[in-house]
Image (cartoon, rainbow, N blue to C red; front, top):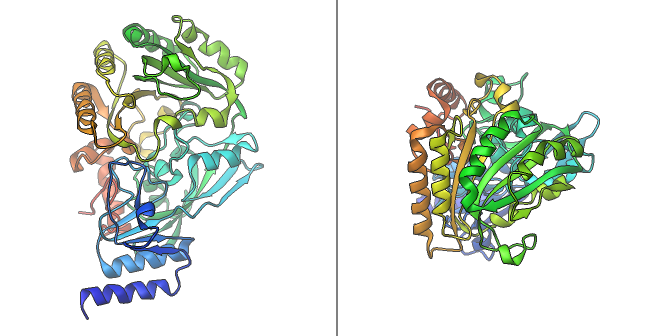
Length: 463
């Protein structure tokens, strides 16, 4: 039987019991369904398998093993370097898996792998609860969690992985297993920061915490020229803030959104985004010194629904825009690091290009370093340089800005957050974890995916 005939036979066999949608090149929905968040990624899977449950996932994996070619797994499709799609091969799309069940008594939530952050927040906030997640609501819960999960609650309640109680995983050979402290504990360790290397996680069980529905937070911005003074003030101020407050400094041009006065659109600014995970009146007191630093151009820090704060940065990261990202952690905001930050802010010439500097520490740093693969427990801050354009015009120039920015910061870097890592090679992945953790992950990879079926990720090859 020819290869083509064998593939057709395998596809026909898959279609007999597949409940979701099987989409091939040439099908009416193909071009729409193959798109991912980052518009600069343009790939053409041989088959898009939109799964409705575990049975579909197992069948799609069996088809992929039989026909060969790459296997990509897509939750929200937000992978910066495009790991959530492929050329040829099989794209296992989990976007139809939207189930969420909140237990307000136990303060837990079970969520399937196609859930987006905003969808989970909406269900948990109905009970005044939340679990730490990311900063853009249309991000996929699965990819965010498997890489660590930083966001506005992290200094108080830790990373997303620090609140993961258990998960269901379909392994490379199609077995469905539970990963938890009591079952397959080695796998549970690995998926909390090891990315998608070990299987398809189909469902997550999270610990929830009392948050909102009203929190104190938002964005306050000053002219970019104040960046040197603001950065040094900020460095001193954060030494005394409680864990309830998570912040990030952002250099960018103010976007043209309804919440920003038209006369400020495009204005170069240095801004601080803040979220206080505690009583509003305490948040007002803690943030007051920041707001008094200097008269701001824009002050949006106020009591507001947690759901609104979570969605605040969404307009800056829409689907389809072209993005290029490089990132890294630093131990502290030294004078040298601040000088780099200021210079790179002044070099921004695009209305979309920006970079946040997230303040870490707090609850993140109190989790033992070897309890999860996440490599940034001791980091003070993480930089994320994001170059962006509407399309190919000007993209090369923004990519150069990102690369130049990263090179300027490189002498001060101590690591990198996995979810901010681009396609940078095995050495960079190893350094993100550290040698001992990387070796432990590699041992786990040999156990659960010895053939490296799941290699479209920040890959840890079994050998």
